[in-house]
Length: 147
Image (cartoon, rainbow, N blue to C red; front, side):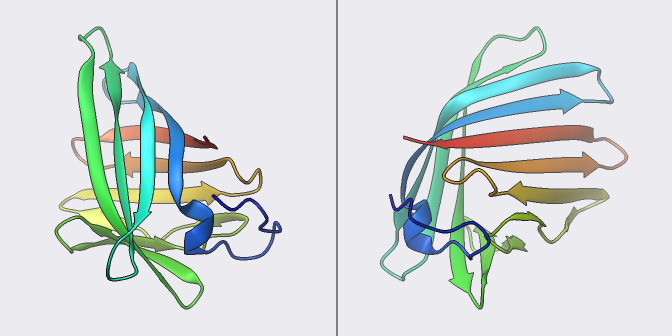
């Protein structure tokens, strides 16, 4: 992974390539429970030039037993932004890969997903999601550390 990006400049696809240690802390305000995920996220270049994002780890939530958790996305770098898609090609959100920035909102039914990225401690970075709706009210803070 490249680590030569200067803060304030946009990060590019090569900056994200590789394996990242992932820690996610979940605070469920509605259920008054917490959870955490420990695992890895891997970003690799796809044949079409996009990046494939795959994460896997162990999720502990409330008093429940640990579970294996995974998710996958596709990242497309275009015009100074990253467009994020679900693995099936549906659009998810976008963000500018620099500094401390808000991404675009993602409405999902009656729920609204809002994200804020923090790249100010590169090559470590954070994605904070706030999710609110009639059945959801939680915050998930994902911290990525270069491996």
